[in-house]
Image (cartoon, rainbow, N blue to C red; front, top):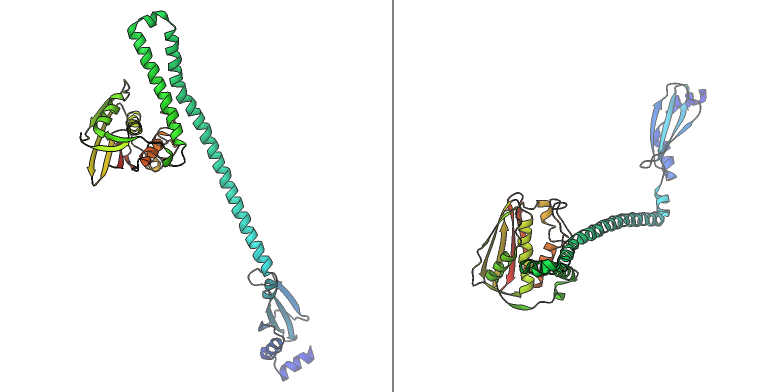
Amino acid sequence: AMRNFELEVQSPFTIQGLDSLLKKENINAVLSLTTTDSIMWKSAMYSHKSFVYPHFQIISPYSELERKAVIIDCKIPTADIVREMGWTLVLAFVLSILLILCLIWQIKTIIRLSRLDNMRNSFITTMIHELKRPISTLKMCVSGLDNKQMVDDPEIRKELLSETRTALDNLSAYFSKLRDITFNNVEQIPLNIQSVNLHDLFDTVAAATIRPSRKDVVVHNEIASDIVVSADRSHFYNILNNLVENAVKYSGDSVEIKASANADKGEVVLSISDNGNGIPSGDLKHIFQRFFRGKASVGEQPGMGLGLAYVKLLVEAHGGEISAESTLGQGTCFTIKLPQ
């Protein structure tokens, strides 16, 4: 300690000399001089484990009696280790990303399958419910035909036959709708194209519309009598019938339906509007999807969620397009554009 003290007095310690010696050995360190609180007799090393800045410190006394020491702060070189493990780290990173993507894909698949399963169960339940009504009507009519007294009454027999035809027509319409909706593209739908007068066709639809006894239904046909389109009459009847039925179904006790059309530059624009319940904005962009039923209609009205998807499919099969605008509580307007 005395020798170190005398050496310090004769030739004071500087960090420049030590720094030059370390750099000769390619060691980069931060050097500083300090005065310790107590006499330090031996050197000490402290390790600082850090992912960002791993380093260690060496505190070494050079004049014990004066409590003088030098601090050597040296960064641990990790570049060589990283360079040697580079490809391994890259491979591990890529595999981690792939595993994460596979996990996300698997979760999405599970969710999608769960939704499909719920949709299938809902569709089967609704389909059974929809088919039970015409089948029950047919059973009732068949039972009536087995009653001689009812058969002998012309009015009752006529009513039974009318109800039977209606039930069979409903069954036929359901199966036709299911057949058409399963086509992968609109080109597969068979069309019998002919000249169709829109005014007369809408009159036919309006006359055949079922008006519930508790509702006051008013239908206005404002389509000009000379507007004609090239279309499949049967399919176009189904298009108009679906839209009018929906207007009646999703409305209050008083519903007013208005149909108008105009022809310009080889295109016919047909609008069917109502003053019904309207469609929420969140449901409006999904109404033409298969099996979609808005929250406002689920549980209130029977249906399979195929009506508007079926309408859109038939409109596109005719080379046209359909859109909808709606205000909740005020009504909905469907617009169909067709080549004339």
